[in-house]
Image 1 (cartoon, rainbow, N blue to C red):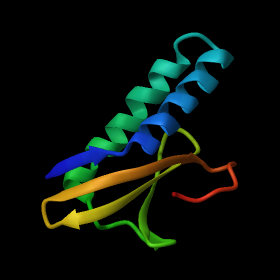
Image 2 (image 1 turned 120 degrees about the vertical axis):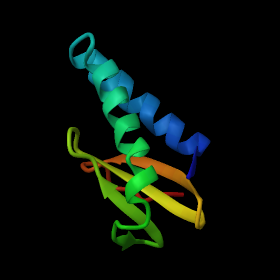
Image 3 (image 1 turned 90 degrees about the horizontal axis):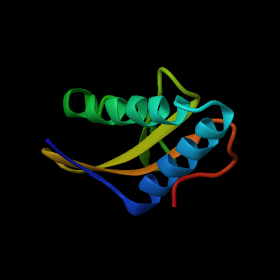
Image 4 (image 1 turned 180 degrees about the vertical axis):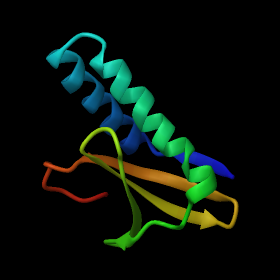
Length: 92
């Protein structure tokens, strides 16, 4: 399974990193590693998440974030957004 991360999703992760890092040093690193572990789990669990607004949506177990992705083929997907559950917007 090939997993791509869009530039929008990378930016979302970076914003989350700096938010948590500003709360307490080191938490930003934990946030980033947790989100990437969630994304890595899509190798096994891809396509099993509900479709919301046209994208599969995986809820992070550690942080209040939603990971939106789209299946490109049977063996590839793209993560299009990583959005905090308190944020009031949808993937672009």
